[in-house]
Length: 84
Image (cartoon, rainbow, N blue to C red; front, side, top):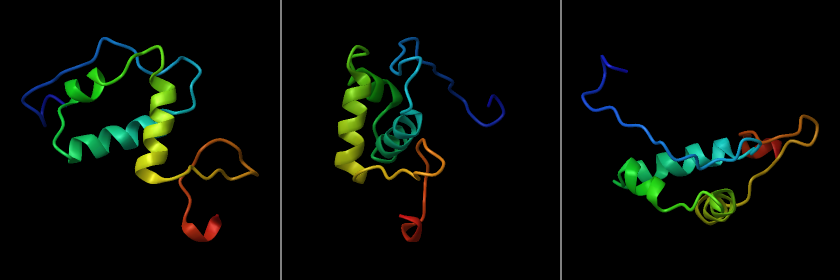
């Protein structure tokens, strides 16, 4: 990371719960907001840690539609349209 960037920042506020299964949704929404030109600090500042997981669920569904799950394997995953 030091070789490929000039500025390194990190967040001291935990958004995700310790047992959450929403890490993929957080990543997708973070990437979307970075693509739109938001700063990482702005993205993090829009969340109240007490209800961040609920907000992520709503935002993800609004931006990308419902999350499909593969019933045989459980958990979240990316699937092609023909596997749904």
